[in-house]
Amino acid sequence: MKTTIKEELTAYINNLINDRVLTEENKDEWHYLAFNQDYYMIYYYEASEWLKRHEIDPFEAIEIVINYNQDNFGENNTDINSVSIVNMLVYIYGEELIYSCETIEELKNL
Image 1 (cartoon, rainbow, N blue to C red):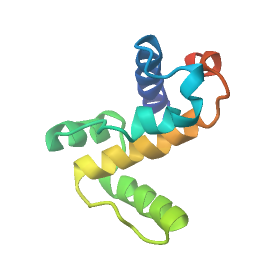
Image 2: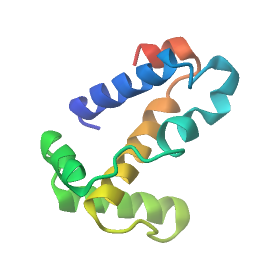
Image 3: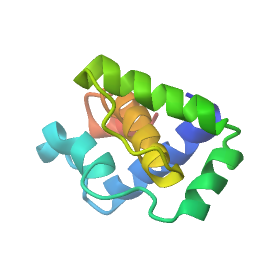
């Protein structure tokens, strides 16, 4: 994961902690609440710019998502458009961040 993405998602997670969306009591739901309950991004232009800002080639992003889906679900079930790909990338990278932590304090200090 690129440093810029980690920094952005860490700030996003910290906002959720500050808003009491993520708490010690709902630890089993952190990933769902942060990266699956709602879309991270909803506009195609915004998603395309997100990829550019993080210097991710769209084909590389598609490959990451397809490989993740194949490894975890046996098939690709993500639409190939900028919004779906970015939301799935955020889901994947968010999973990596969330599951590396055991406590709220660890999440805060990513």
